[in-house]
Length: 308
Image (cartoon, rainbow, N blue to C red; front, side):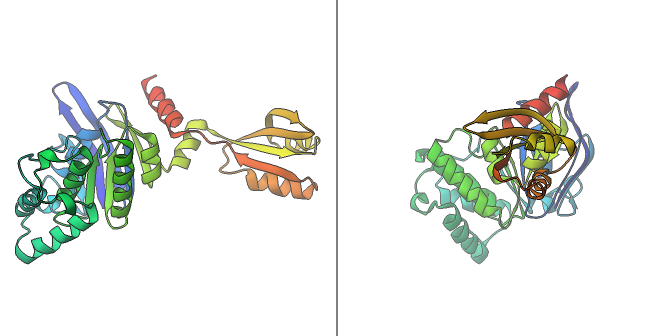
């Protein structure tokens, strides 16, 4: 659905985007993470056609964004970070304006405006000046504007920035609903938001992609090993684990229960092996869980490694 190949964008002597390649599948939600100035917004603006790359190619739905910008833009709905709405307009007027720019007229406009007003929940404020609306409602109006032409792709730059907690939850739920039928790229500084909404996470730093994958794949990449906690009443299970090649890096005893912290390099998941070993040795496992690395830790580790 979206493909970037070796994309470069310079501003003077600065390479804001430095050879970015990325593929986004239809109806996939991609969370774009990176420090301030990493190149997220510049990359997103090149996907939308608002900026032209200095090198490389950008395609949306098989359409080259540079060669055929008008066709490509019809496939894209874009919500910029600052959401530049016209405050003297009502939401209805703003949607009508957006529809005209995208060649949506007459009965088609009436159909689309009814659908986007219902989806974004702005019916109660449709005739009020946008300048009188709360930040949460303004974001919803911005989303409705991005959706008015029924695009296949949504590009959302910091869609929950500046919202209060209840507004954040509301906008997240709306994005989750829209992602069932749209391909979505969203940038955010909120790690939990990326983890909750995204099928894939892309981390960009200094204009380059330093990692991409599911949260679980990024966790494995950052940690480089699997860590599992095992609790049993069988003290000898530590020796059994070590004889089978597992590394027990920590153990403790509490109330005749033994907790072993087990690691293994280069394996996807060792829990099934440990479970089968315990069954074979007639050891009862009271508990077993995989230790998780937070997305914040993954992000900090990967961006710091790139800077080192």
